[in-house]
Image (tube, rainbow, N blue to C red; front, side, top):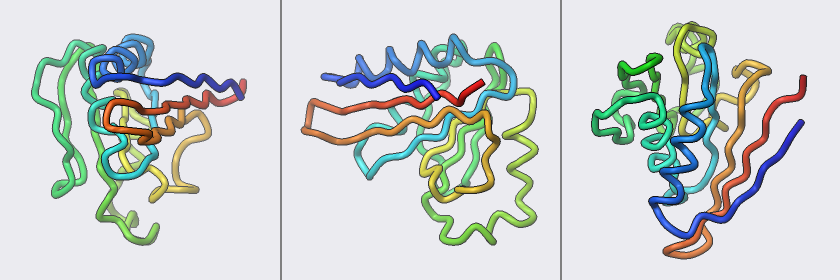
Length: 142
């Protein structure tokens, strides 16, 4: 497993990191975003969308669980904040997206522990101050 860690000093720096992740994404890439409220998960998701050429306004899909955006590759933006138990995933069919032809960005991904593909890229976001976030990216081993 490879790990990359950086400190973001602004929303724009976080957007740029997300944009890089979006440009490097391939069909079936899954980004699992983990971090507390206000740590920057949605900002990073916006950057990933930008890297995929998506110009739509990306917001947190908390009430719908999933928003789909069209770009160079489809973006499947999940927000699992309202999921309380893994049993709630039964019948939702999210795995079809995670293993599909687009890029999945999953906020509150810890709610899906044990369900995500082994190839998932895990991004840990930590709120350090109003203008500083620690972002660690774990890439799966080959």
